[in-house]
Image (tube, rainbow, N blue to C red):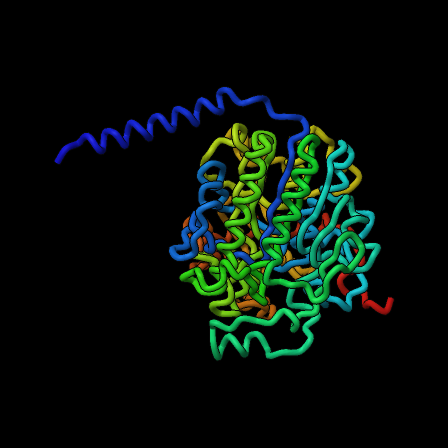
Length: 474
């Protein structure tokens, strides 16, 4: 057999690598006002993308994004459910500091009277100090009353649904009961009376969720085009793939993974539309795009829920499947391609964006945010070496280096009851990604060290009001 085909392939790969390297050698210095685009999925699991190992769901645009940028394999959200996870992303603070987690309620509902406190400083408010245009397109879930809406929290524009797409249910069959009978079940939009808002006005109710992913992307692209000549921050929190699952007609029935796959593949396609727009406008080299999820997959919905891959459990739990999420950073000419196995979190967007935009982050409050830019841009060590797993206003676990200690747990599927183990459970996450082997008895010294870290962290938490438990009548 001739060796020439192999030699040609090797030569082509070498030329490609040289071209990539040349791009970085010739790249312009980092702008002091780069654009930021955060694409935040809802209930997307760590194992739901091709580039994170899914063998069935086709995600070519995200796979390309990961190959051109950085895939972070140990990236965390600050809570395993919607509201507190979003509060942490926007403020750089564990939700326990601002009352956006509660022992009484996991998230905000249409009958909730609370929301993200006005005293909190969001990413949008911080970036507006340097004349950034700001927009949120998608799910807010930090308070639906006028005083809590995005336009009161630093965003110039808002187009989206104010809470989860399964709320305001208005009749129809039970979703889980229907998928148990038939996993090809497709819901009706009129059974979910959720409002679609522009600014502070409801413009459609119920929202036509069949087209919501495409319409969010249309709106996001319009914002990018309108602000191409100034720095901007676009926050695009999709409603999908949270149940009920909806997909546009052109994607429905196309994925081998069923309806869930249809929904993820539609998100992938529309991420590609945003990247194409940035390239068309020639602002891709000045735009950081981050793609991630608000928590792990909703496992109790069977094939209508996602996959955490090898991680244990999913949404609602503080096992890895609940809070470790698929994450991609992309910034042509600035972020060198590669795979990062270091720790990072959506909490770190505050300090990282501040550093890249040459803005001082808030100094009048405790932040839980680290500047990841040295790790992103120069492959230097991540400054994050610890992570605390909070849920329902309770600290369940801590990670330090490769070690994770559970002091409270929830049953591994969905919102199981909280239990306190008879003794803390210790796992080595780099040897045991699935949290199968409790090593507490073998390493009492590490258990003691992590218990001290927990004690110190709890002592650092300031008093706060429970914003999720405030009833609407107030």
